[in-house]
Image (cartoon, rainbow, N blue to C red; front, side, top):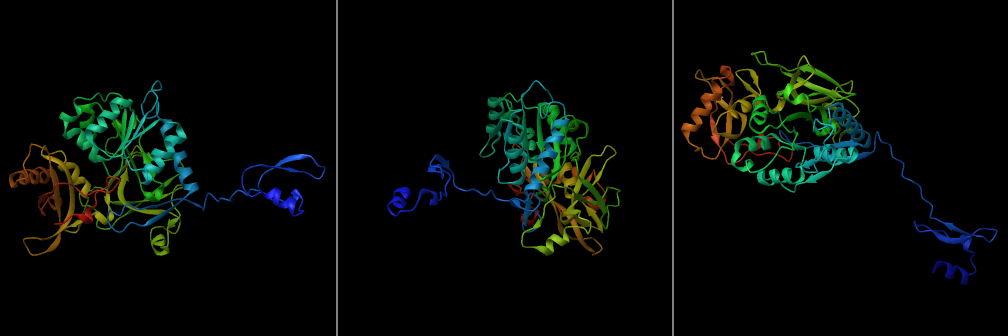
Length: 411
């Protein structure tokens, strides 16, 4: 149409400019026909500064913050994760004769889903089966039907696998060589119990939205060897451990974890003050999590600064008490938080309180509550005891990553 119009107007075809991607047959100055494409200027991308994703922090202890992750951040984390996974024997399965097949349970809008499932599996060519929502029977059926070798899970799913053997029993889960547990620390007892009861291996990992998200992972071999840890630091990262005031008098480590590396985010969108507060002068991101590194280089998470309970002047990590409570035969799920408490001499302080979901077959009764308290209190120092009591709830509030939303727990 354009050529016909220009011909009627006496305009030569050489003056017609094509601006779409379809080639048009025009003529050069010698009268020869040649294809012409619209001019295309590729966008200029600065991987170090241009955003790939804008995700939100978990908001477990405050309002979520918009986390700016660059293309460089994401590519760096993919390379770090791929390197760690390739360092193990046979990837997720632990065997080179088995092709990995991943079951995606975590939301793909979450940074773990975006990086460790969607992009990593695409990068490494791993077939991935996506579940729209989690149900224990559907999970087991998918593993059996698709011969899944790996699944990323949260601790609540592992607890469910152990708590409802009548659901898991009909299914063949032998193809499932490893599960990666993320979101919150998983106690060594649960790792051992899962292997003893279902012959399933669990490897843990640690990270934050601000790290794209991973900073530590375990290989297939490491999971059973170091069941209480979240693995070793990923390549090209540096960790620093900074003492926290009012450390636990029992000797448990209480140092904040600071991280630096190519996968660490650019800052919080529109909040320069929060960005400054969360970075050290030499570029370390202050994670707000506390823990220590063992003699083998494995990170052990003991809690989160904003969630720590200050009982009788000492810091108490809720995760430690939760892992103990989960070993009680009546506990399906639990969350511990601090509540206002007055000692017999009138001193005001915080005391740990437990919110408990009971297993089927058990009654939410004061007698059950008392046995749970006694079970926990008998294994900890006096200031860590559940002096704030325990309360029965129908469910523990968690976010999409499986982290406990403690601010939603009402005493």
